[in-house]
Amino acid sequence: MKGFKLGAYMIGLLCTILALNFVAALGLANVTAELGPRLSPGARIILPNSPDFANAIRRWSPFAAPRFTVVVDVATEQDVAETVEYANEEEIPFLAVSGAHGTITSLANFHYGIEIWLHRLNWTTISEDSDTVTFGGGILGGHLVDALWRSKKYTVTGVCECIGYLGPLLGGGHGVLQGKYGLASDQIVSLRLVTADGQLLDVSESEPDPELFWALQGAGHNFGIVTSVTAKIYDVPDQGVWAREGFYYGRNSIENAFEAWNQILPRQPPTVTILGVLERNISMVHTDPLLKISVLQENVSRVDSAYTEAFRALNPIAITSQVGTYRDIPGWELMAFNSTQCAARNISAPHFAVGLQRWNTTALRMVYEAFSAVTAGNSSFNASEVIFEGYPVQAKMAIPEDSTAYPFREDNLYAYPLIRYNANASLDHTAIEVGDALRRIILEGSGREELHVYVNFAAGDEAPEQIYGYEEWRLDKLKELKKKYDPERRLSYFAPIPI
Image (cartoon, rainbow, N blue to C red; front, side, top):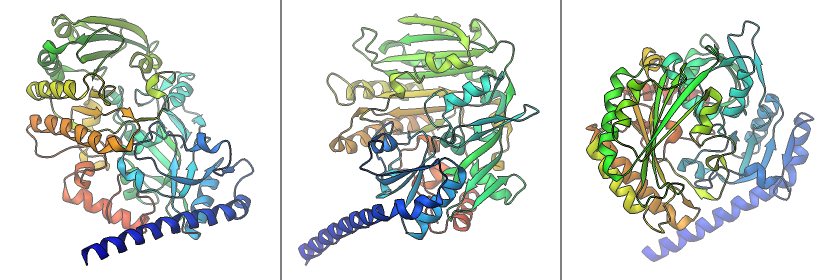
């Protein structure tokens, strides 16, 4: 009987797969004729037999990639709304894509549907009073920085240029300016949103639903496709000067380097950011993994020694220094458009995030040794990294915890084991085990029982409260809003909120 059940299950699974492929093929025959006339003249429907299809579905990493049957290359927000309406009429799943950097495992649950490609919604308009910018939902972070810089303005953006700006924004959005202004999501004034049923809404703190606005600031991936955002912007001070010092440490300096970082935390000003990465640095002849720590400071031509002296005193293997502007930071941290980090390659790269109060040096020694072992020699994972981030927190923490859906404002630091390897499904399970093990060491060292996970770097195996907060009221509120705005769970492929 057990064998019969297994055989029946396999037959059923095969039939389901065949049915999905059949439905997908049937939809392709009609989608151009049926959806095409509903779109603007500038929109395109890209089918798998098009030479543009591979580029349209290309992702930064193939890990947990969604599978698309057709791409709608939208030119207007109305194209987005029409595509959503059509997909619902035909019972076809849909997923909006801007930077295509997500690697959360829930994305792999998307099968045989429509990609709504937002990349041409990449415009910017600065208000007459120069206090806000309105930008399209497909803009990349680096392009937004460049557009604002031309008007001597900036806002809270991440360090990496090539990622879509919208995804990080909807999950909170960390950056070197958050000590002065708060998270990227804290800058939102209003949004244009296509709901799960294809309605176009203007959403702000006052209309049509303040609770929806609340949810879009931290859990926004679950509530609609944002076609444009109006956000606060700020004058670039002086000439926009930034300075950086970088320090490289080997095996014997790990505890001391992180303890030096800990000592700076209580006095870290809003203008200073500290970033780190543990990696095997091929450019520096060294057999062991190296820890690189970068100290960035605004409005100075050289980083204040109050924030570098402790790092210098440890006799690092190498020290580097730069001076430039806000626009140079991605290049310094090897995350500019032309960097290998930004190249779309056949490299799997799942993340495993954890938020912290301070570094536990004993745990980080264990992380170093475990990382060294798992990446040694010709290991498939020898291009992996463990990323450490210490952004300033003053303005982020000044905003009340309950004012947005972003949880865990009390966290000072973030660590992200990032497991890189040539895409190979047979290695996925091991990669997840490695990433989870490294994260578990960091969490246990923190003394916390609660795992705090930044949604944009979630792995996908986390419980909802680990991403959206442990307060019962917070998750209840999100669930009720999910029932209201997406009862059919059509927008549930990125860190989905359960109903």
